[in-house]
Picture (cartoon, rainbow, N blue to C red):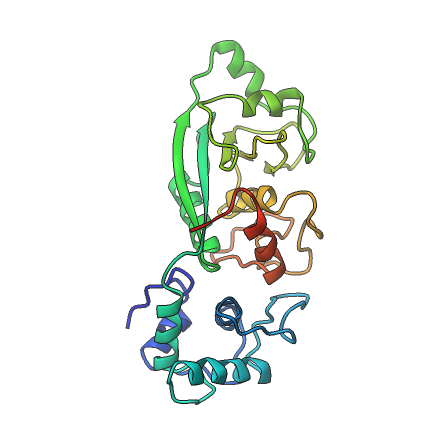
Length: 277
């Protein structure tokens, strides 16, 4: 049976659970992680399953997950099996059917990108949807530069810092139509002068923006948006010990949908750019 919740619809193992292929204690992976996150958001905290070095919640169907599933089943008149069976999966899908937050992005392009724009947006939508956050397309604009501007911004010079009030980054972020200060601008450029740099989440105060290179990979737009949402106050800036995490510091061509931790999601939901629906 097809799932409808944005949290689960792209996870094949959970779709199969809704068709009757039960998930038992001992299972592990991102599918368990997403069910754990959903249960936490529905009011079933899992203090023993969070804070791990990889997934957090840990993606391990252990005793705590079984306990919380039974509590969820009991509260919703479902047989207390302690497994993710068809009835339980469909109930989770029902209660998580709506987005709870939204982030609006506005795109400004100076260059064609290696990954089609639509694909970068779609990948960002998939990642954040797993946690009930809707990525909303606000607007798109191809910046029509003068010859002098094209020469100047062909390569973006300057250092990528958290607060950028001067230099080419700052000038670039002033281009294009204005947007609300609670929305995020995403600029696509040809390249940066900094070697191997594919994106920068730095921006001026009250002008949330990020910059992405034309050669950026599938998940890099979502990664830079993540920096804007997490802000410089979040620590650690990068998730160095888990390649599957969206905030892993190196670009990835893996097709597996990236994940976030409960700590990252909590901070993102606090961002002025992430509003409740």
